[in-house]
Image 1 (cartoon, rainbow, N blue to C red):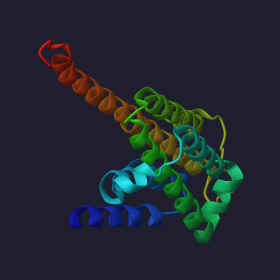
Image 2 (cartoon, rainbow, N blue to C red):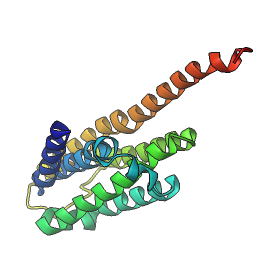
Image 3 (cartoon, rainbow, N blue to C red):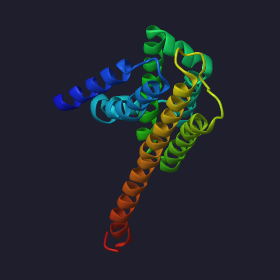
Length: 198
């Protein structure tokens, strides 16, 4: 537990104190917060109590996507890149909704596995859509930063590529792991259920 707590602390420090003035730094922070730290907190540190108190999967998924999309609007990103305080508020909000989301996912995997997998896939598609916009947009989506336009465009595209890499590794990867565990559990249960002797 001590090593896990140290790792979680390191992730928090890295996510909150990555360079806040460039899009790539922000996206790396978002990935650390939402895709690594939040699942670790839920799976290893929070315990079953948080999972049992998790809201419905629909509520958690909607909340996470709404907060994610809000903080990725041009105006919100400009504010976060210009103000350390707004940056901390943004990261704290993203961490909070991600913890709720992953807690709801683990709770749903006990009963409504297909709904949990659908929520993971939907979230992954929305995140990948934002990432694709960053990569393929013909102009800057977050203009107004004190850098040359060419450097900002390259930064924006790199941020999108990083998101496109992290998205399938996290949400699609989690779906694959959950499906594999589900099938493994079914295969273990089937012989006993089919036995006439019980």
